[in-house]
Length: 527
Image (tube, rainbow, N blue to C red):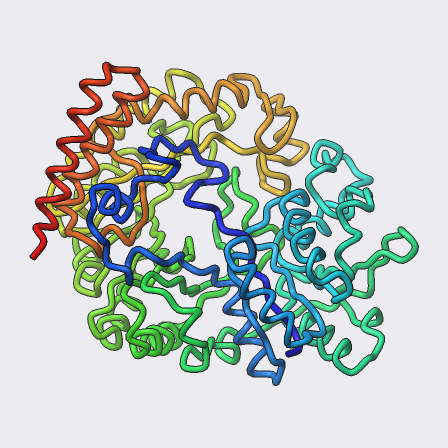
């Protein structure tokens, strides 16, 4: 074996940044499968005993394999240590670690420590968004950009040997796949890889960068060959990517600094969907893109292709509210869309304008109504604490959510996030920090109208101020029972969560659990 690819760690069903108000019993989040187990029902193992894999690892597996590199893949190192040891027995030359789902150097250190306990000598190559952003911030360190506040979160800015000593070389290119391939080839053949472009490494504790050469890897040429991906890496709910970068510049987001926006053609998306459908194992495709369905034209183009090749495949995706019309929503429904994720962020017009969201509360209401009427569920995200946020603007968000009518066979779920002051986002710029009196970074900040502690408190309380809106426990629940029945389950779960939060009487909480048990058993009558 040439390389083991490690995509990251599991999130154990918990959001890293969101405020979760979910029902937990015996240390387990009570999604539908765990409710079945709790009440003595054996859930469908196909839909309950899996974790949706990270696409980054599978993409690298396909990219390298088609170039003759022999690969092993670990999606969640903490859950797959036994498999990791089996792969190590095949004497790999290197380990490629993705930072797509590792957000700071401390989370990376957890992974590298786990690796080094079993593989103290194997070369570790690391790349991905955290490394690229670290490189960008390092280039800004001597100007008026505030890199001091985020030094402890990023490589290169943070010069502590403890954090970088396990990593032999960093890939600092935005894409970086071809650079990774060159490094692995050099290690295989015993050549010096430190002359390859787009790398960073430490020599005698001094940071060294090699020359930069931008990559432009083709979506078409590097289409994942799904028929060559081992069955063990597939799951019923499976991620797929149709774009790279972002054409929008929402001011709270650092998703696409200095990144070009690229879309796969409908023909290429169709080829991938057809291949996934052919596996027989994938039941629902989850598009990971914020921007695949970015306007009416693209909704029509992609939906018609999915109808042509999908063979009844169901899917979910992020989608912009202004891409939904009475015509496009029918295409979404007919092509198999069962759930849409919409970043609404606020119910206040001025906050939306400050965020550069290019949407309105009125459009949000119309969008949810259209989707629900056509049986399409929603996952709606809201951001609490953006500069200008006050208790009054938060109340506008509560009022917006309470105006949703919840018509039709669909369920609406909400995820609430406190504002995160992300380095490299537009709001983090020196001009905006001065304009809003922004201090701090990431989860600890303050500005003229709010601070992070207030935002976390208000985000936690928002769930208890809204009606008929539920937490998201996983899109696979919509494969396990229909949305009408799921709404009934979700309503009792929400009542339990509220009752526990309010410290209601044990008798009342027990009555709610009994109601939930009756509902779960009625959905699973047995032989």
